[in-house]
Length: 445
Ligand SMILES: [Ca+2]
Ligand SMILES: [Ca+2]
Ligand SMILES: [Ca+2]
Ligand SMILES: [Ca+2]
Image 1: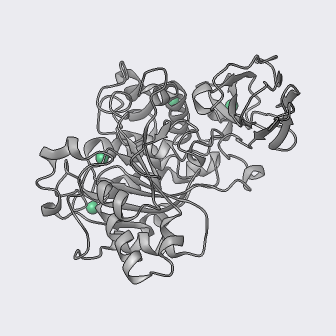
Image 2: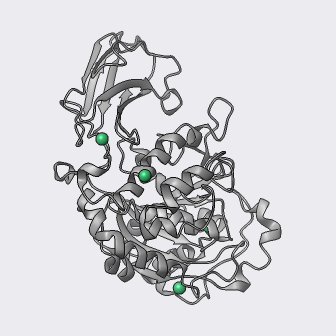
């Protein structure tokens, strides 16, 4: 059959506005997240950063668990309680910069202890290299006791809310495994609806839950992140001693003062970078890429993803954002102590005119207008449109006209089958520190 020579191109200019700082952005739905932390020392560091981004997410629960590395867990200690107390002290200041921060009492009300049973992980550390997608199932949670943490997961997933829930395993996933088991056996009519909402972002599989969930709960989207190692974990970022000393631990309030390490060391932070509401739409699709990295489907299961290898480099998709992420953190730390809004920097508010899902034909000129982008501090803005090549299926590079202007035009290329192209509109201010916001344009043709 003869194919038409006019190929349809779907241009999706998704609203990827900057972090929703102002009320004008209240319509953007914040990702619902559940954190599971094993309380390792670098989890303490990640939690401090996480707390400063709770205004950008809908935090449903924070659950303390164990892992094959922290076999007894750390809920019996008070590291987390101390952080919430410090957060409470800076809260009056934080809300001057973003009114959406939850109170410390609210966070306390959604904090739980989950699975910290030593015997379930005691023999697994030696087998940790087998705890990968497609690995052997080494446990089943059938006869385990429910925990306050697993029951909270059940409650959140049973809610009559179809929006995705992002469960982050900073440690083991046993608490979630038990929750999924309970849903399957005690709520069979709700089970599929409940677990289909879940994307679970795993920092490795730090117990037997990953391989169990892959096989027994295949409707759960599983992300296996191994590339945190070498990008965000212990000492993988060079020369961060001064950053931590000057921008976190000293003169930035009681929360920063609790940062337990002398350098940036946050192996688990990519799990919540994935749900950053920063315009990159990272969490809408594991293949999109963003602060939390980019992932490709394995051929083992329909809903299991692992680190994408971009340009032959598994760590590239996390590494390209590290500077942006840390400068943004520097500004958040300033919010802890800046008495007035004007005394700290805030991200640009990115806006692209018109429909955000656009269909165009091959050969047509696509015009995108980001002129309504503003900065809440009145900073000077610079613009960069760039093609996120790995995120799209189209292998070529598109010629972008005006890539350093607020408006962009380019010609939609001719294709022989449906393809996608992702264009990022990156807006950078000239405040201190310099901050970026983004908007993604995805072209389906
Ligand atoms: Ca405790
Ligand atoms: Ca951890
Ligand atoms: Ca500072
Ligand atoms: Ca600014």
